[in-house]
Amino acid sequence: MRAGPPPSANPETLCAEGGRVTTRLDWERDGQGWPQRDASRFVQASGLRWLVQQAGPTNAPLLLLIHGTGAASHSWRGLMPLLALHFNTLAVDLPGHGYTSAASAAQMSLPGMARALQQLLAAALGPQAQAGPELVVGHSAGAAIAARMCLDGAMAPRGLVSLNGAFLPLGGLPGLLFPSAAKLMAALPFVPEMFASRAASPAAVQRLIEGTGSRLDAEGAALYARLLRNPGHAAGALAMMANWDLRPLERDLPRLTVPLTLLVGANDRAVPASQSRHVHRLLPASRLVTLPGLGHLAHEEQPALLAAHIVEAARTVGLPPAA
Image 1 (cartoon, rainbow, N blue to C red):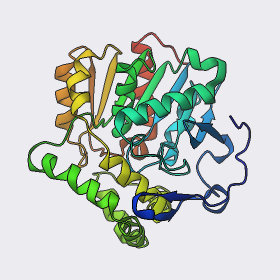
Image 2 (spheres, one colour; image 1 turned 30 degrees about the horizontal axis):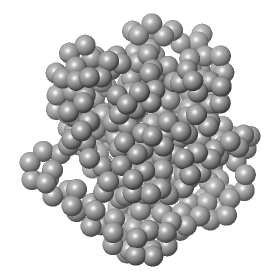
Image 3 (cartoon, one colour; image 1 turned 60 degrees about the vertical axis):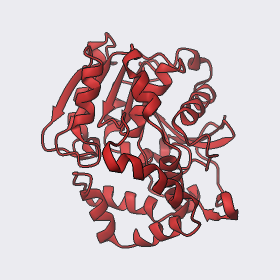
Image 4 (cartoon, helix red, strand yellow; image 1 turned 30 degrees about the vertical axis):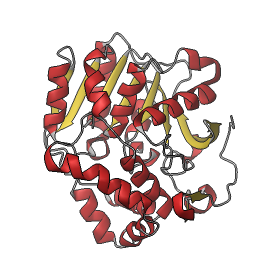
């Protein structure tokens, strides 16, 4: 484990099948002005070099934040400081995303990523790792990772909060075609560079964000542009999609015993609200809260509102936040 400020990092590369070499984000070159930079450090675990951010009282309940596909720790830039008033808050860049190094195909699958994150928590938390996080907040695919970890016994939090959780496979024709298309795109050496070149256009990035049903301020759009312009980050997002299979999770979800709160943006165009309603039916004890007017990136649109809902979720499972 490396504590303290992140060390200077040379540009990392991703070597994939077919001999592709893709430049990754470099902390010293690309990470200037990154949200929560002063709370960041790098941790070695599971053969990867992870960016980890931690803020809040060390004696407060531990809260873990898990971002979704194609995002990174920047996604919590408005929410994390608010949660850190009440919780010992931990956020990471997932494998292949942001400033965390690239991973193997097996590690980019849902169970593989869950195992890798479990090992990262052990390395990052030290003696505190045995207790693990007491509350976990997962956005989109991050909620699926959190659920998988709970089902596999990798952690046992008091509560789980899903922000527009992507728990279920796509239905119909898209469900049949998307996995094959993602695998094909991940295997083609020019695709990450093509995505990155398209992200050079601010208008293209704005269209991608608006396609989620959310509206972000200029800073939020600029941070996504910084990520999307990097071929290594694009390759990581594609690898995650190519190796993702949610069918086993859908089968296992009725066994989830951790109290679940489902926060759902009514304007989410990326993950239909019907997914959360279906999960709510599978788990009748779960809580479903609809967020009017908010999209897939609801926590970036209205961080104060989402923080209030998360604090309330903590209280419902008997986990009082620090004063």
